[in-house]
Image (cartoon, chains in turn blue, orange):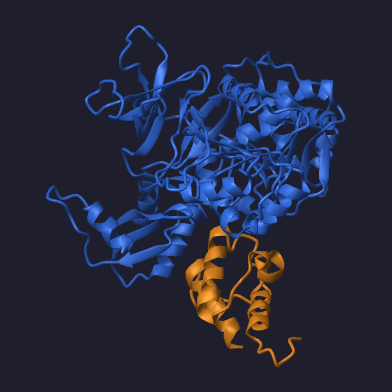
Length: 526
Length: 87
């Protein structure tokens, strides 16, 4: 039994050295070469002082080099911190400062951003530009060393033995925080392996499978893509970002690459269904579609299932803090069914239960907050003991158990057959296009503007993407919507920038003086 | 050309984080982070409503949507009257 994530890949390299591990737009790499290349990069990192427990940033477009980077970092015993290449520099710099990223594996295409990151306080002293041999010309302070692929080639190919164990951190994924600062979810090798082993067995992932990689590496859907593929010795085919834009291109990608398993957020499946020009019997190689991250509208799910009759559809549910904790194989859906499908039952070796507001176990049909316990549950939020203590709690019913349960903040009800249905959130976290967004995160960005006196951000339910975002603001000095849009875009990722702004003289208040969000939500929906 | 102006305005004001006065040339690639899959659908809906054309699933491709010039070509080809040859 493998105890470390990169052992999965090294085992595949031993068993099937010439099998293709990763494909990206015509470039391929075998398992043997992936193992060798990640050894070289791991030694490079080690020579630059990276040791067990360190955090190394990954800041480049998803590519074969990015996959090499993931494995190289894991081999040093450090945790990889995937940084969204499309996020504003201020956000990336915050993350780097927050968990102390001093070494960044990056790409030449990000050169324009490096000095911005440094100017914003990222404590980086080494940039490894792994996708070029050329010396990179970028204005950088003297304390920053820049290495290229040529330098990496000179490193030893011998495996590093660092003595890591499965309880060591493997990666940190940052998610939207309600007060404007992203939270770093700490995950160990064992956290990931518990999920990956269940997934490979449940979905029968084999060496002849061809998995798509749609999710970016900073989203936890990528944990399935990368490591289920490695465990099975299967091929991972990275979806180019431009392909994602065009539903028919997604269809052609799946057909041309012989994809057998597709895993993504429902938003892109909605678009594929409605605009992908799918005829019955399309996508003949596809046998399984897994989806997670948001509710898949039943009408589109039913339509897609009718177009792809041979495909197994499975709903996977779970926050970043626990990876997938419940799942539901979708049966044939009745034509008149409108309500969303259930989130299903706990995966192997995971326990979920619902707790009412009074702190007791919810019975069937009663609303409660979903708690999760098991080996996939995170270790906490990096550097934030308070938030960690609020999320990871002692078992509410069994005081003898010492493991902590994670409070998801999701409201659920247990159905007659023991599976669960998602009902909503306890707080103001929303999903939009599968992205998890704290409305407070956006409000914090707006409040940073000197002329914003008051603001409230609301979610407007949407057919295709679950929610759209609308902001109500009270401003001084004739601030315009376009100013606010630009201001936000410099602070939060694009998908969090409100799609519409309404400038108001004042915001409606409840009797206790708080912003009356329900009134605003009503106004937003009309 | 009026189509280009309207299309450019829509992209700038509804999809892009720029002022109407900002410059979006006919050749700027829209695919390097300017539009995403959702705003692309909004753009298609806009073209269908504004110009009264039907955009086929198969026409929603990089060839037709990479630049403002590409979009204008797509719309113009659909608006050409049967008696006139499209170039």
